[in-house]
Image 1 (cartoon, rainbow, N blue to C red):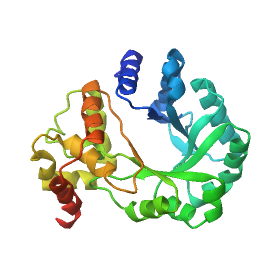
Image 2 (cartoon, one colour; image 1 turned 90 degrees about the vertical axis):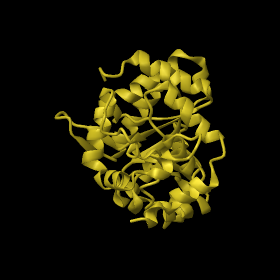
Image 3 (cartoon, one colour; image 1 turned 135 degrees about the vertical axis):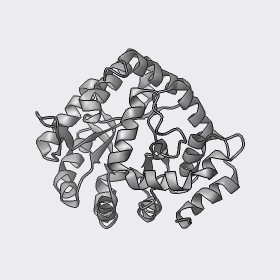
Image 4 (tube, helix red, strand yellow; image 1 turned 180 degrees about the vertical axis):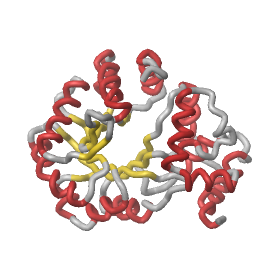
Length: 286
């Protein structure tokens, strides 16, 4: 990633650790395969990483033409796990997610995942995906008891379709991890005024993958996020997600240390109740 150097990535991760963040999430397919390798090199450079909880993924890979595809075969999963262990310099993965699986993928891979757990190479296993995958897991108590104990999916101020599944998962004892809790910053008033290469990438992704949410944010202007004294928009967005009783943790991306400082505050301070109520009511304002 020429627009974000390894030196910057190192400083950012170490600053996160200094702030008390100890859960890092990655995947072998992220950043064209560079993200996991970079995090692994950082982990090997500091003894503090032995206390970090690191989650990674399997099932998604790049072909020779630069196209993503899914492969949940035993050979593919075992290759991913061995590569991750080598990159991290660890003997066991804290948490391995199946990345975007169908119900058939879950059935196909569950025996392999259980075997890796029994071999001591994987501790926890989870599903990072969409509603159909969560519904399938929640319909099979044996899969929950024997294999998958974590559900990871999108939840934020604009996308809440996983709410009922996450509530059920939490009730049944699974850990629930929210991704995209900042809604890709779609609510930022200067969203279409990029100041960096990463901003350009964020805009492109929103236009391609998140246009409904972008329209949602633009039409409402997300006033609730901008008129709460003493709180920034991103802080309120994250606070809303963390305030949900069925969310155990939220995973967000950042490229700036000052951004991390702000978001850690959101995880600690009690958000204003009236702001949380107004955010909850956003879906009723269509």
